Length: 567
Image (cartoon, rainbow, N blue to C red; front, top):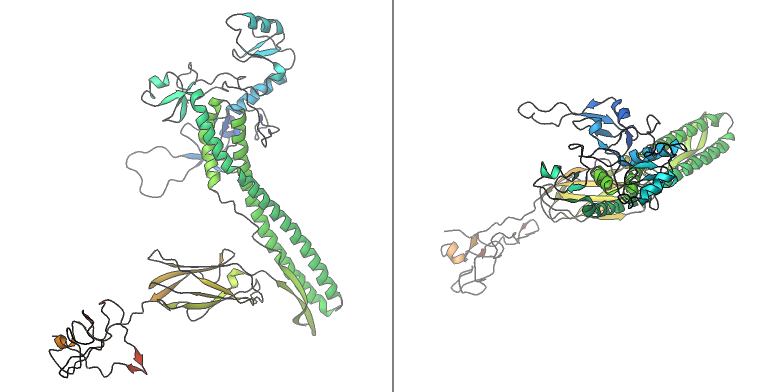
């Protein structure tokens, strides 16, 4: 529903922490003043002709059965020249992207400033323009400007000197409706979330809720401001992470240089035989340096890209809220809010992925080199999760309600056992079929090993994950099957021995009850009877409870009990 270059509104000044870009009126592709600027979903602005020269590529359709009937043509996308993000093109192509009215207004101001002295008056055509009427959008000479203020119809108009135009949003032409080109956008449709004109509310938006832009701007700008406030702190988080990575890279290089010097001084004493050993140590050290620097460099590039995306979103929105008119904010609100929400969901808890824990041990025996016993080895203090292993008989099998214990053996990048503790170990044991997460205990043995224990409460398959610094160790995750340990009843669930045995005097019961007349088992109302149905093998009164009958010396402690017989 929008068209034109800029909209009316009160002058807005840039807030603290939002400095203006040096070439914000020029396109980054052609280095010229913007021509029909369009803002992409990633909040980068380029000329529409420049974007049209980019080679579009088809967007892959989603997986699944194709819809019945003829569908729309294949969707196209382009790649943002600034951040390389994929941008899906609307059906109208590049020209249907959101116009950047702030950029267009900056171009108009630049043109007014570049014209300099000699710009003709729009009214008389003879005098040199000294000011501009923000209501009429006309350049006026000194005489016409005074006359403009004296006339009754234009006495309330604001005439601003040419040199003071920067910061006024009324400089550009009014933004007209794309559906009704003769009507200015003055209303906002809440249902469609877009500005509309007076003719629009009489047509397609007749049943929709709408209001004047001046009445709704505060609500929408406040919501954008809240989203901006919750997104801005991530800039500092990424900047600190980037500083840590760069600082660690410098420390890593200094550490490597120092170690190289130590290695060379140690190996110089061996003259011929030790040179081969020295070269071997230096190559090993160089491989470690390259490995760690490559890891840091890759992470640095990722953080820099995240920071660039976040800065673009924050600076664009700050500039929009500070310098844009009410209508401009509402026009660009959709794309800005969408980008800020996407940036807000990103995980910014990033830190260096490697450490500088490397040292040289000159007393370490290194074997034979050229017939001489040599010393000196490169030791890595950092543990390598991929080389750490789990040991113990309880790794894959366990019983319910019985303690499971196994050991984690930590090793470094060379596969050698660690001799110290202090690593951050995370263990999770989760039932695959139930919402059951077990509490685990981790004991640091301070010698490179850790004792892990837990008690499974339920039988069934469990997923066991063992991680060091959020990386799985060797063999993790794995499945552990917990078996049910339930002692089955060997007797019957009866009311008494007299009834279940058919009156046999020799029938006994584990409840310990007896009857007069030589009956060795229990009976209703007689001594020792529990007063309810119970198990003959253990005396429990709960039918589904686990049997309490135990073995003594490999044989039943109730061996002397005669088995009861059900009638």
